[in-house]
Each structure stands twice: as structure tokens, then as C-alpha cells.
Image (cartoon, rainbow, N blue to C red; front, side):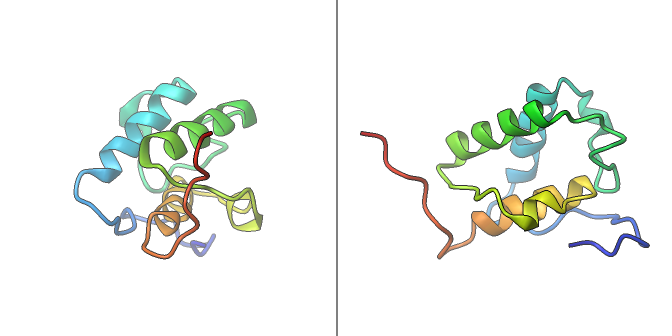
Length: 103
């Protein structure tokens, strides 16, 4: 996670170019937030992302990127938007847990 005494100034590296924009578009849509407000050093609190919106964001990211995002401590400890993106990016790396197949 990001050092809480130093707000992040850049997004983490993602596996594919343009992926950050796709994720930010999902966050803006699902949480009803102005896309311009989604910057690395924004906090979940300042963005007023409700827990129900976070669940919607995670479901949509899982669906769009065919990944599985475990609801663990790492996700619960996100402070900055960059932290959330980092958790998502980690699940997109080779060797991450794949999304369950639909029956």
C-alpha cells in the first residue's frame, strides 16, 4: 500500500496501455463521480465512494477484465484511489486467480 504520509502522484503500471482509463471510466460510472476527480491522490473518503458503489465497481471490473478480485485485507486497507488501482492491477498480472467460469 501507499505510504499514508506521502500521497501518491502517479498510477501504478498496468499490464496493458489504456487500461487505467477503462478502470477509471468504470469507477466514475459506478460511483457517479466526475471523471476529472479521479486522480491518484484522491482518497476513498474524499470521493465519497459508498460501500455499495465499491461492490458495483469491483463486479464491473471483474466482468470487463475477466478477473477475480478477492475481498481481502489488501482491498479493505485502500486509502488512496491509487491503492485501489494497484490492488486491481495485481489481479490482472499473469498468475493471478482467474475469474470463475459461468455455468
